[in-house]
Image (cartoon, rainbow, N blue to C red; front, side, top):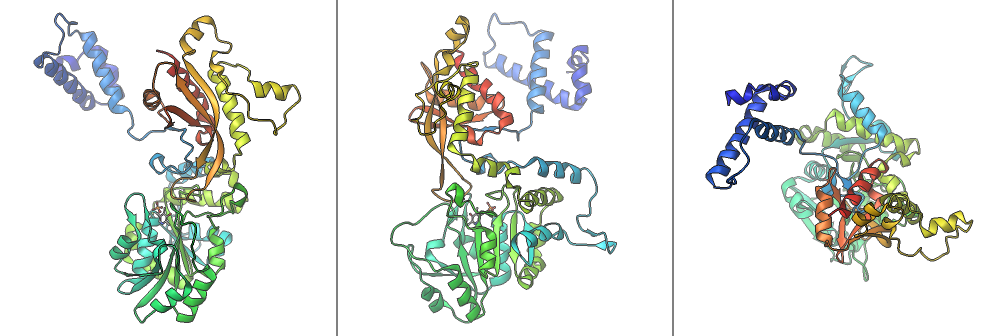
Length: 491
Ligand SMILES: *Cc1c(COP(=O)(O)O)cnc(C)c1O
Protein backbone atom coordinates (compact mmCIF):
# COMPACT_ATOMS: atom_id res chain seq x y z
CA UNK A 1 0.00 0.00 0.00
CA UNK A 2 2.68 2.48 1.04
CA UNK A 3 4.62 1.60 -2.07
CA UNK A 4 1.67 2.14 -4.40
CA UNK A 5 0.84 5.44 -2.74
CA UNK A 6 4.39 6.67 -3.24
CA UNK A 7 4.33 6.12 -7.00
CA UNK A 8 4.87 9.41 -8.87
CA UNK A 9 2.16 8.33 -11.36
CA UNK A 10 -0.49 8.63 -8.66
CA UNK A 11 0.74 11.94 -7.23
CA UNK A 12 -1.65 14.05 -9.30
CA UNK A 13 -4.61 12.02 -8.02
CA UNK A 14 -3.62 12.66 -4.42
CA UNK A 15 -3.22 16.36 -5.17
CA UNK A 16 -6.62 16.52 -6.86
CA UNK A 17 -8.42 14.63 -4.10
CA UNK A 18 -6.69 13.64 -0.88
CA UNK A 19 -4.30 11.01 0.41
CA UNK A 20 -7.04 9.37 2.42
CA UNK A 21 -9.38 9.25 -0.60
CA UNK A 22 -6.75 7.66 -2.86
CA UNK A 23 -5.72 5.24 -0.08
CA UNK A 24 -9.31 4.01 0.11
CA UNK A 25 -9.43 3.50 -3.68
CA UNK A 26 -6.06 1.64 -3.72
CA UNK A 27 -7.35 -0.60 -0.93
CA UNK A 28 -10.47 -1.33 -3.00
CA UNK A 29 -8.45 -2.11 -6.12
CA UNK A 30 -5.95 -4.36 -4.32
CA UNK A 31 -8.79 -6.10 -2.48
CA UNK A 32 -10.60 -6.68 -5.75
CA UNK A 33 -7.51 -8.16 -7.39
CA UNK A 34 -6.82 -10.45 -4.43
CA UNK A 35 -10.41 -11.64 -4.56
CA UNK A 36 -10.17 -12.32 -8.31
CA UNK A 37 -6.99 -14.35 -7.78
CA UNK A 38 -8.49 -16.24 -4.83
CA UNK A 39 -11.59 -17.06 -6.88
CA UNK A 40 -9.42 -18.31 -9.71
CA UNK A 41 -10.76 -15.56 -11.96
CA UNK A 42 -7.40 -14.07 -12.74
CA UNK A 43 -6.50 -15.53 -16.13
CA UNK A 44 -3.43 -17.82 -16.36
CA UNK A 45 -1.35 -16.84 -18.07
CA UNK A 46 -2.92 -13.47 -17.45
CA UNK A 47 -1.64 -9.94 -17.70
CA UNK A 48 1.05 -9.16 -15.19
CA UNK A 49 -0.14 -7.05 -12.29
CA UNK A 50 2.06 -4.19 -13.29
CA UNK A 51 2.34 -0.62 -12.07
CA UNK A 52 0.54 0.49 -15.26
CA UNK A 53 -2.36 -1.88 -14.65
CA UNK A 54 -2.73 -0.81 -11.04
CA UNK A 55 -2.52 2.84 -12.01
CA UNK A 56 -5.31 2.40 -14.56
CA UNK A 57 -7.51 0.61 -12.05
CA UNK A 58 -6.90 3.19 -9.34
CA UNK A 59 -7.66 6.03 -11.77
CA UNK A 60 -10.89 4.32 -12.80
CA UNK A 61 -11.83 3.79 -9.16
CA UNK A 62 -11.16 7.46 -8.37
CA UNK A 63 -13.26 8.66 -11.33
CA UNK A 64 -16.08 6.32 -10.40
CA UNK A 65 -16.11 7.45 -6.78
CA UNK A 66 -15.99 11.10 -7.81
CA UNK A 67 -18.97 10.84 -10.16
CA UNK A 68 -22.03 12.39 -8.55
CA UNK A 69 -24.87 10.06 -7.75
CA UNK A 70 -27.51 12.69 -8.61
CA UNK A 71 -26.97 13.83 -12.17
CA UNK A 72 -28.82 15.24 -15.16
CA UNK A 73 -30.62 12.93 -17.57
CA UNK A 74 -32.36 13.52 -20.88
CA UNK A 75 -36.10 13.05 -20.47
CA UNK A 76 -37.32 11.78 -23.83
CA UNK A 77 -40.45 10.17 -22.33
CA UNK A 78 -42.82 13.04 -23.15
CA UNK A 79 -43.97 13.06 -19.51
CA UNK A 80 -43.48 16.73 -18.68
CA UNK A 81 -43.67 16.60 -14.87
CA UNK A 82 -42.05 13.20 -14.38
CA UNK A 83 -41.84 12.67 -10.62
CA UNK A 84 -39.03 10.10 -10.93
CA UNK A 85 -37.03 12.53 -13.06
CA UNK A 86 -37.32 15.47 -10.70
CA UNK A 87 -40.56 17.04 -11.99
CA UNK A 88 -40.16 20.63 -13.23
CA UNK A 89 -36.84 21.81 -14.68
CA UNK A 90 -36.22 25.35 -13.40
CA UNK A 91 -36.05 28.57 -15.36
CA UNK A 92 -32.76 30.40 -15.96
CA UNK A 93 -33.98 33.31 -13.85
CA UNK A 94 -34.83 30.99 -10.98
CA UNK A 95 -31.43 29.31 -11.12
CA UNK A 96 -29.61 32.64 -11.23
CA UNK A 97 -31.52 33.71 -8.12
CA UNK A 98 -30.59 30.50 -6.31
CA UNK A 99 -26.90 31.05 -7.01
CA UNK A 100 -27.04 34.71 -6.02
CA UNK A 101 -28.97 34.21 -2.79
CA UNK A 102 -27.28 31.00 -1.67
CA UNK A 103 -23.70 32.16 -2.14
CA UNK A 104 -24.21 35.11 0.21
CA UNK A 105 -26.04 36.06 3.38
CA UNK A 106 -29.60 37.18 2.79
CA UNK A 107 -32.52 38.81 4.59
CA UNK A 108 -34.27 35.43 4.77
CA UNK A 109 -35.66 36.15 8.23
CA UNK A 110 -34.51 39.70 8.74
CA UNK A 111 -36.67 42.78 8.49
CA UNK A 112 -34.44 45.38 6.83
CA UNK A 113 -36.79 48.28 7.70
CA UNK A 114 -37.00 47.50 11.38
CA UNK A 115 -33.52 46.07 11.82
CA UNK A 116 -34.79 42.97 13.60
CA UNK A 117 -36.02 39.44 13.11
CA UNK A 118 -38.52 39.08 10.28
CA UNK A 119 -40.51 36.27 8.71
CA UNK A 120 -39.42 34.20 5.76
CA UNK A 121 -42.93 34.04 4.26
CA UNK A 122 -42.92 37.70 3.28
CA UNK A 123 -40.72 36.92 0.28
CA UNK A 124 -43.45 34.84 -1.30
CA UNK A 125 -46.69 36.22 0.11
CA UNK A 126 -46.07 39.58 -1.57
CA UNK A 127 -46.13 38.00 -5.05
CA UNK A 128 -48.94 35.57 -4.24
CA UNK A 129 -51.14 38.39 -3.01
CA UNK A 130 -50.54 40.25 -6.27
CA UNK A 131 -51.08 37.15 -8.39
CA UNK A 132 -53.92 35.40 -6.60
CA UNK A 133 -55.39 38.01 -4.32
CA UNK A 134 -54.42 35.70 -1.45
CA UNK A 135 -54.47 37.72 1.79
CA UNK A 136 -51.90 35.39 3.38
CA UNK A 137 -49.66 32.50 2.37
CA UNK A 138 -46.89 30.28 3.71
CA UNK A 139 -44.58 27.68 2.17
CA UNK A 140 -43.73 24.18 3.38
CA UNK A 141 -41.73 21.25 1.98
CA UNK A 142 -44.28 19.94 -0.51
CA UNK A 143 -48.02 19.78 -0.95
CA UNK A 144 -48.26 16.57 1.09
CA UNK A 145 -46.87 18.53 4.06
CA UNK A 146 -49.21 21.42 3.27
CA UNK A 147 -52.26 19.12 3.45
CA UNK A 148 -50.97 17.50 6.63
CA UNK A 149 -50.32 20.71 8.54
CA UNK A 150 -53.57 22.30 7.37
CA UNK A 151 -55.68 19.33 8.50
CA UNK A 152 -53.76 19.12 11.76
CA UNK A 153 -54.19 22.82 12.53
CA UNK A 154 -57.78 23.26 11.49
CA UNK A 155 -59.30 19.89 12.30
CA UNK A 156 -57.30 17.93 14.92
CA UNK A 157 -59.71 16.11 17.20
CA UNK A 158 -62.67 16.94 14.97
CA UNK A 159 -64.27 15.66 11.79
CA UNK A 160 -63.45 16.54 8.21
CA UNK A 161 -66.09 15.95 5.55
CA UNK A 162 -64.82 14.59 2.21
CA UNK A 163 -66.61 13.15 -0.80
CA UNK A 164 -65.99 9.43 -1.45
CA UNK A 165 -65.11 10.45 -4.99
CA UNK A 166 -62.08 12.36 -3.68
CA UNK A 167 -60.46 9.80 -1.37
CA UNK A 168 -57.48 9.55 -3.61
CA UNK A 169 -54.05 8.00 -3.49
CA UNK A 170 -51.18 9.78 -5.20
CA UNK A 171 -47.89 8.00 -5.87
CA UNK A 172 -45.48 7.54 -2.98
CA UNK A 173 -48.16 6.44 -0.49
CA UNK A 174 -49.93 9.76 -0.12
CA UNK A 175 -53.47 8.64 0.67
CA UNK A 176 -56.09 11.04 1.91
CA UNK A 177 -57.48 8.66 4.59
CA UNK A 178 -54.00 7.95 5.97
CA UNK A 179 -52.90 11.59 5.95
CA UNK A 180 -56.15 12.41 7.70
CA UNK A 181 -55.48 9.84 10.41
CA UNK A 182 -51.93 11.06 10.97
CA UNK A 183 -53.17 14.63 11.21
CA UNK A 184 -55.39 13.67 14.14
CA UNK A 185 -58.61 14.49 12.31
CA UNK A 186 -61.44 12.05 11.71
CA UNK A 187 -62.47 11.39 8.15
CA UNK A 188 -66.18 11.69 7.51
CA UNK A 189 -66.90 10.23 4.05
CA UNK A 190 -70.01 11.34 2.20
CA UNK A 191 -71.68 10.49 -1.10
CA UNK A 192 -70.53 7.73 -3.41
CA UNK A 193 -67.57 7.19 -5.71
CA UNK A 194 -69.30 8.75 -8.69
CA UNK A 195 -71.94 11.03 -7.19
CA UNK A 196 -71.87 13.38 -4.24
CA UNK A 197 -74.41 16.16 -3.72
CA UNK A 198 -74.29 19.23 -1.54
CA UNK A 199 -77.05 17.69 0.57
CA UNK A 200 -74.68 14.84 1.47
CA UNK A 201 -72.26 17.33 3.04
CA UNK A 202 -75.11 19.15 4.75
CA UNK A 203 -76.48 15.99 6.39
CA UNK A 204 -73.01 15.02 7.68
CA UNK A 205 -72.39 18.33 9.48
CA UNK A 206 -72.56 18.05 13.26
CA UNK A 207 -71.00 19.75 16.32
CA UNK A 208 -67.71 17.89 15.75
CA UNK A 209 -67.30 19.05 12.14
CA UNK A 210 -64.21 21.26 11.78
CA UNK A 211 -63.58 21.41 8.04
CA UNK A 212 -65.07 20.76 4.60
CA UNK A 213 -62.34 19.29 2.38
CA UNK A 214 -62.27 19.33 -1.40
CA UNK A 215 -59.50 17.34 -3.13
CA UNK A 216 -58.43 17.61 -6.76
CA UNK A 217 -58.75 14.05 -8.10
CA UNK A 218 -55.35 14.58 -9.79
CA UNK A 219 -54.35 11.28 -11.31
CA UNK A 220 -57.71 9.74 -12.11
CA UNK A 221 -61.07 10.74 -13.49
CA UNK A 222 -64.55 9.42 -12.97
CA UNK A 223 -66.52 9.64 -16.18
CA UNK A 224 -70.14 8.91 -17.01
CA UNK A 225 -72.88 9.19 -14.39
CA UNK A 226 -71.15 11.66 -12.08
CA UNK A 227 -72.02 14.60 -9.90
CA UNK A 228 -70.12 16.86 -7.58
CA UNK A 229 -71.29 20.13 -6.00
CA UNK A 230 -69.82 23.33 -7.36
CA UNK A 231 -67.21 25.15 -5.28
CA UNK A 232 -69.72 27.96 -4.81
CA UNK A 233 -72.26 25.58 -3.27
CA UNK A 234 -69.63 24.16 -0.94
CA UNK A 235 -68.48 27.65 0.07
CA UNK A 236 -72.07 28.75 0.70
CA UNK A 237 -72.67 25.71 2.90
CA UNK A 238 -69.45 26.35 4.82
CA UNK A 239 -70.43 29.98 5.42
CA UNK A 240 -73.91 29.02 6.61
CA UNK A 241 -72.55 26.42 9.01
CA UNK A 242 -69.54 28.49 10.07
CA UNK A 243 -67.10 25.81 8.89
CA UNK A 244 -64.04 26.64 6.77
CA UNK A 245 -63.56 25.07 3.34
CA UNK A 246 -60.09 23.76 2.44
CA UNK A 247 -59.23 22.78 -1.13
CA UNK A 248 -56.20 20.62 -1.94
CA UNK A 249 -55.60 21.74 -5.51
CA UNK A 250 -52.66 19.46 -6.19
CA UNK A 251 -51.07 21.11 -9.14
CA UNK A 252 -50.84 24.82 -8.54
CA UNK A 253 -51.93 25.94 -11.96
CA UNK A 254 -51.61 29.73 -12.14
CA UNK A 255 -52.73 30.43 -15.70
CA UNK A 256 -55.55 28.88 -17.66
CA UNK A 257 -54.41 26.05 -19.91
CA UNK A 258 -57.69 25.77 -21.76
CA UNK A 259 -55.95 26.85 -24.99
CA UNK A 260 -53.81 23.71 -24.69
CA UNK A 261 -56.93 21.61 -24.18
CA UNK A 262 -56.29 21.17 -20.47
CA UNK A 263 -59.65 21.79 -18.84
CA UNK A 264 -59.25 19.86 -15.57
CA UNK A 265 -56.85 22.32 -14.01
CA UNK A 266 -58.59 25.41 -12.68
CA UNK A 267 -56.26 28.27 -11.80
CA UNK A 268 -55.63 28.71 -8.08
CA UNK A 269 -56.95 32.26 -8.16
CA UNK A 270 -60.40 31.06 -9.20
CA UNK A 271 -60.75 28.85 -6.13
CA UNK A 272 -59.88 31.76 -3.87
CA UNK A 273 -62.24 34.01 -5.79
CA UNK A 274 -65.02 31.45 -5.30
CA UNK A 275 -64.52 31.98 -1.57
CA UNK A 276 -62.55 28.88 -0.54
CA UNK A 277 -60.97 29.71 2.82
CA UNK A 278 -57.65 27.87 2.38
CA UNK A 279 -56.02 26.25 -0.65
CA UNK A 280 -52.83 24.24 -0.98
CA UNK A 281 -50.79 23.28 -4.04
CA UNK A 282 -47.41 21.97 -5.20
CA UNK A 283 -44.55 24.17 -6.35
CA UNK A 284 -43.09 21.68 -8.81
CA UNK A 285 -46.13 20.50 -10.76
CA UNK A 286 -47.90 22.81 -13.24
CA UNK A 287 -46.45 25.83 -11.49
CA UNK A 288 -43.07 24.76 -12.85
CA UNK A 289 -40.95 25.71 -9.84
CA UNK A 290 -39.13 24.01 -6.96
CA UNK A 291 -40.47 21.26 -4.71
CA UNK A 292 -42.66 23.13 -2.26
CA UNK A 293 -46.16 23.22 -0.85
CA UNK A 294 -47.96 26.56 -0.79
CA UNK A 295 -50.79 27.26 1.64
CA UNK A 296 -52.80 30.38 0.83
CA UNK A 297 -56.02 31.94 2.01
CA UNK A 298 -57.69 33.82 4.87
CA UNK A 299 -55.26 35.60 7.17
CA UNK A 300 -56.61 34.23 10.42
CA UNK A 301 -56.49 30.60 9.24
CA UNK A 302 -53.05 30.84 7.60
CA UNK A 303 -51.73 32.52 10.77
CA UNK A 304 -52.98 29.59 12.85
CA UNK A 305 -51.22 27.16 10.50
CA UNK A 306 -48.02 29.15 10.77
CA UNK A 307 -48.14 29.00 14.56
CA UNK A 308 -48.43 25.18 14.50
CA UNK A 309 -45.14 23.72 15.85
CA UNK A 310 -45.16 21.40 12.82
CA UNK A 311 -44.47 24.44 10.65
CA UNK A 312 -40.96 24.68 12.09
CA UNK A 313 -40.41 21.06 11.02
CA UNK A 314 -41.78 21.58 7.51
CA UNK A 315 -40.42 25.00 6.57
CA UNK A 316 -38.21 25.39 3.52
CA UNK A 317 -34.71 26.61 2.89
CA UNK A 318 -33.59 29.93 1.36
CA UNK A 319 -32.88 28.11 -1.92
CA UNK A 320 -36.55 27.23 -2.25
CA UNK A 321 -37.66 30.79 -1.49
CA UNK A 322 -35.21 32.20 -4.05
CA UNK A 323 -36.32 29.81 -6.79
CA UNK A 324 -40.02 30.04 -5.96
CA UNK A 325 -40.00 33.85 -5.88
CA UNK A 326 -38.31 34.05 -9.30
CA UNK A 327 -40.69 31.44 -10.76
CA UNK A 328 -43.73 33.33 -9.45
CA UNK A 329 -42.34 36.55 -10.82
CA UNK A 330 -42.45 35.10 -14.34
CA UNK A 331 -46.24 34.81 -13.91
CA UNK A 332 -46.45 38.29 -12.41
CA UNK A 333 -44.71 39.67 -15.49
CA UNK A 334 -46.99 37.65 -17.77
CA UNK A 335 -43.97 35.72 -18.98
CA UNK A 336 -44.93 32.12 -18.21
CA UNK A 337 -42.92 31.07 -21.27
CA UNK A 338 -39.79 31.65 -19.17
CA UNK A 339 -40.71 28.50 -17.28
CA UNK A 340 -39.48 25.36 -19.07
CA UNK A 341 -42.46 23.17 -18.12
CA UNK A 342 -44.89 25.77 -19.48
CA UNK A 343 -42.91 26.10 -22.69
CA UNK A 344 -43.17 22.33 -23.11
CA UNK A 345 -46.92 22.36 -22.48
CA UNK A 346 -47.42 25.13 -25.00
CA UNK A 347 -45.48 23.48 -27.82
CA UNK A 348 -47.87 22.53 -30.61
CA UNK A 349 -47.75 19.22 -32.43
CA UNK A 350 -46.31 21.07 -35.44
CA UNK A 351 -43.54 22.61 -33.37
CA UNK A 352 -42.57 19.23 -31.95
CA UNK A 353 -42.71 17.82 -35.46
CA UNK A 354 -40.35 20.44 -36.83
CA UNK A 355 -37.87 19.74 -34.07
CA UNK A 356 -38.22 16.00 -34.60
CA UNK A 357 -37.59 16.37 -38.33
CA UNK A 358 -34.47 18.43 -37.72
CA UNK A 359 -33.37 15.91 -35.13
CA UNK A 360 -33.80 12.92 -37.43
CA UNK A 361 -31.92 14.78 -40.13
CA UNK A 362 -29.10 15.55 -37.68
CA UNK A 363 -28.91 11.87 -36.70
CA UNK A 364 -28.47 11.08 -40.38
CA UNK A 365 -26.01 13.94 -40.82
CA UNK A 366 -28.04 16.51 -42.65
CA UNK A 367 -30.29 14.56 -44.94
CA UNK A 368 -33.14 16.60 -46.32
CA UNK A 369 -36.54 15.11 -45.73
CA UNK A 370 -39.69 15.12 -47.83
CA UNK A 371 -41.83 17.63 -45.92
CA UNK A 372 -38.94 20.11 -45.68
CA UNK A 373 -38.52 19.79 -49.42
CA UNK A 374 -42.17 20.59 -49.93
CA UNK A 375 -41.89 23.66 -47.74
CA UNK A 376 -38.86 24.89 -49.62
CA UNK A 377 -40.79 24.38 -52.84
CA UNK A 378 -43.22 26.97 -51.56
CA UNK A 379 -45.94 24.59 -50.51
CA UNK A 380 -45.97 24.61 -46.73
CA UNK A 381 -49.59 23.53 -46.49
CA UNK A 382 -50.49 22.18 -43.07
CA UNK A 383 -53.45 20.36 -44.59
CA UNK A 384 -51.23 17.87 -46.29
CA UNK A 385 -51.14 14.40 -44.84
CA UNK A 386 -48.26 13.70 -42.48
CA UNK A 387 -45.03 13.17 -44.38
CA UNK A 388 -44.12 9.58 -45.15
CA UNK A 389 -41.98 7.73 -42.65
CA UNK A 390 -38.46 9.09 -42.62
CA UNK A 391 -35.49 6.87 -42.66
CA UNK A 392 -33.01 9.64 -42.74
CA UNK A 393 -30.10 7.85 -41.22
CA UNK A 394 -28.93 6.39 -44.49
CA UNK A 395 -28.99 9.80 -46.18
CA UNK A 396 -25.77 11.46 -47.12
CA UNK A 397 -23.37 9.36 -45.12
CA UNK A 398 -20.14 8.06 -46.58
CA UNK A 399 -20.18 4.40 -47.50
CA UNK A 400 -18.28 3.41 -44.35
CA UNK A 401 -20.61 5.32 -42.12
CA UNK A 402 -23.60 3.92 -43.90
CA UNK A 403 -22.37 0.43 -43.26
CA UNK A 404 -22.32 1.30 -39.56
CA UNK A 405 -25.59 3.21 -39.30
CA UNK A 406 -27.98 1.75 -41.81
CA UNK A 407 -29.04 -0.83 -39.25
CA UNK A 408 -30.85 2.00 -37.50
CA UNK A 409 -34.21 3.23 -38.72
CA UNK A 410 -35.81 6.43 -37.50
CA UNK A 411 -39.29 7.53 -38.40
CA UNK A 412 -41.82 10.02 -37.12
CA UNK A 413 -45.08 8.73 -35.72
CA UNK A 414 -48.06 10.35 -34.02
CA UNK A 415 -48.27 10.07 -30.27
CA UNK A 416 -49.25 11.76 -27.04
CA UNK A 417 -47.28 13.65 -24.42
CA UNK A 418 -48.69 13.74 -20.90
CA UNK A 419 -48.48 16.26 -18.09
CA UNK A 420 -47.54 13.73 -15.39
CA UNK A 421 -46.92 14.47 -11.73
CA UNK A 422 -50.54 13.80 -10.89
CA UNK A 423 -51.71 16.77 -12.95
CA UNK A 424 -54.68 16.74 -15.30
CA UNK A 425 -55.47 13.04 -15.49
CA UNK A 426 -55.98 11.74 -18.97
CA UNK A 427 -55.02 15.14 -20.31
CA UNK A 428 -52.67 14.59 -23.18
CA UNK A 429 -50.99 16.74 -25.75
CA UNK A 430 -50.74 15.55 -29.37
CA UNK A 431 -47.11 15.12 -30.34
CA UNK A 432 -44.79 13.62 -32.96
CA UNK A 433 -42.50 10.88 -31.73
CA UNK A 434 -39.23 9.64 -33.15
CA UNK A 435 -39.58 5.86 -33.42
CA UNK A 436 -36.20 4.12 -33.24
CA UNK A 437 -35.74 0.59 -34.59
CA UNK A 438 -32.65 -1.46 -35.22
CA UNK A 439 -32.18 -4.26 -37.74
CA UNK A 440 -30.88 -6.73 -35.17
CA UNK A 441 -31.25 -5.21 -31.68
CA UNK A 442 -34.51 -5.33 -29.72
CA UNK A 443 -36.14 -2.20 -28.33
CA UNK A 444 -35.32 -3.39 -24.81
CA UNK A 445 -31.63 -3.52 -25.68
CA UNK A 446 -31.73 -0.10 -27.37
CA UNK A 447 -33.54 1.42 -24.41
CA UNK A 448 -30.95 0.00 -22.03
CA UNK A 449 -28.09 1.35 -24.13
CA UNK A 450 -29.68 4.82 -24.17
CA UNK A 451 -30.09 4.62 -20.40
CA UNK A 452 -26.42 3.71 -20.05
CA UNK A 453 -25.30 6.63 -22.22
CA UNK A 454 -23.62 9.65 -20.72
CA UNK A 455 -25.86 11.62 -20.06
CA UNK A 456 -28.47 8.88 -19.61
CA UNK A 457 -31.43 9.05 -22.00
CA UNK A 458 -34.79 7.94 -20.59
CA UNK A 459 -37.13 6.76 -23.35
CA UNK A 460 -40.45 5.00 -23.77
CA UNK A 461 -40.76 1.50 -25.25
CA UNK A 462 -44.02 0.50 -26.94
CA UNK A 463 -44.64 -2.40 -29.32
CA UNK A 464 -40.96 -3.29 -29.42
CA UNK A 465 -40.11 0.25 -30.53
CA UNK A 466 -38.13 2.90 -28.70
CA UNK A 467 -40.05 6.18 -28.78
CA UNK A 468 -38.44 9.57 -28.22
CA UNK A 469 -40.60 12.63 -27.52
CA UNK A 470 -38.61 15.80 -28.12
CA UNK A 471 -41.21 17.88 -26.28
CA UNK A 472 -39.49 17.09 -22.98
CA UNK A 473 -35.93 17.27 -24.29
CA UNK A 474 -34.43 20.66 -23.46
CA UNK A 475 -33.02 22.32 -26.60
CA UNK A 476 -29.54 22.43 -25.05
CA UNK A 477 -29.66 18.63 -24.63
CA UNK A 478 -30.48 17.89 -28.24
CA UNK A 479 -26.89 17.55 -29.44
CA UNK A 480 -26.18 15.02 -26.70
CA UNK A 481 -29.33 13.10 -27.64
CA UNK A 482 -28.23 13.03 -31.28
CA UNK A 483 -24.91 11.51 -30.19
CA UNK A 484 -26.71 8.92 -28.09
CA UNK A 485 -29.00 7.84 -30.93
CA UNK A 486 -26.15 7.72 -33.43
CA UNK A 487 -24.24 5.49 -31.04
CA UNK A 488 -27.02 2.91 -31.30
CA UNK A 489 -26.16 2.30 -34.94
CA UNK A 490 -22.70 1.06 -34.05
CA UNK A 491 -22.43 -2.67 -33.34
C1 LIG B 1 -49.51 15.89 -6.06
C2 LIG B 1 -50.59 16.07 -5.07
C3 LIG B 1 -50.31 16.09 -3.70
C4 LIG B 1 -48.92 15.91 -3.18
O1 LIG B 1 -48.12 16.99 -3.57
P1 LIG B 1 -46.53 16.90 -3.45
O2 LIG B 1 -46.08 18.29 -3.75
O3 LIG B 1 -46.08 15.87 -4.41
O4 LIG B 1 -46.24 16.52 -2.03
C5 LIG B 1 -51.36 16.25 -2.82
N1 LIG B 1 -52.61 16.38 -3.27
C6 LIG B 1 -52.92 16.37 -4.58
C7 LIG B 1 -54.35 16.52 -5.01
C8 LIG B 1 -51.92 16.22 -5.54
O5 LIG B 1 -52.21 16.21 -6.84
